[in-house]
Length: 541
Image: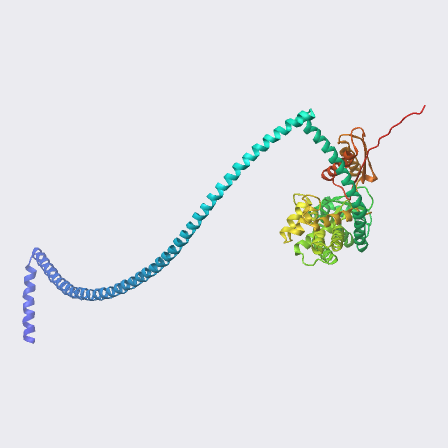
């Protein structure tokens, strides 16, 4: 080893010496050759690796293709089986549907056969009927021809008779007819006047006595106060200083009260009083109670006002419901709709000609029930109709229409029977009376309204009614003059005797009474008294 090492060192020394003699160009060539050789070796190595990788990928791809083919074959087999099953299922369903259709067709055929048989029988029946009608038609035609002949014969005989009569009477046909008509009219008027007079006398003798008895018994059982409560619109103050507190700084308190209650407060020079003005009686009542509560409490400011008004509104609502319940208990009607009871209770704060409408409704209900009991009518319908006949007045300031129309709508809305609705609808003669109960309710209404102390009317309306009575009476031909007497309960008419006969005077009284009923509104009854007087004056010499 030492000898080899020594030799190697000698060689190296020789090569080193040689290399020192090589030029730089040769060194460069050698470096390039070495670089190319390295590149070739590296490229071969890369090529060899890539070839091995491709072979491996090729084998993997073949395996994947084989697996995919096997899987596709399996899927194809499963799909084929599934399609066969689905096809069989569809086939079964189609067959079942065909069977069902065949059954339906069979049933339809049977029904059609039955229908055809029925139609054939019907056609046979119609043919027979047609033949019978043709025979009847021929028979009627023959009868009609015979009647036409008889009619012609009668007309001929009538014409001959009329010619003979005209020759004998020396009058034309029209003259004879006019004379006959005038004679029959006068006779009919006389007979009618006598019959009417007799009927009126009998009715007056018997009917008035019976009516007085029935009405007297009803009124005896229904004794109520004659003085009715009036709606209070004035609040009394403890002192005039309270006016300023109610008005408040810059009027904020009075504005708060008016805004919360919907009424107008009138503060004038009247000492220790405030006037409440408003069209709604319930609002006025809420305002009155609120003012009284505020005056008693002493704390008057907008927030307190709103609290008190809300509280008083609840109390008034409670009072309304209680008033409706009490009215139902007093009249014995216990199955009214709850909302209808509340509306009925609102009538406590409603007046008509100074008469409290709720008390009037209760009176009418009781009187109607007593009258119905005496006359053998339906007591329940009469009492119910009497209690609800003015129900529309509770909402007539909020809804459009007369109180009768509103009452009819309310009664139908809350499930009242048509008999009760008719009582409401007919109590002011808006429609013709269909039931005896409706007549009884109208009579009971008139009794309650016209009894002494029940109502009060204004002086202007009183004068207007008297003038209207006399105008209606004077509008008839043959009237000389008329006088409204007995505070408008009677009108006396003096007719011209040379123009109006006794029978015509009787019919005139009927016509005037009818016109008064149609054109005027009044409580109770108005007596029409027609007077015909003939005076013959002679002087004895």
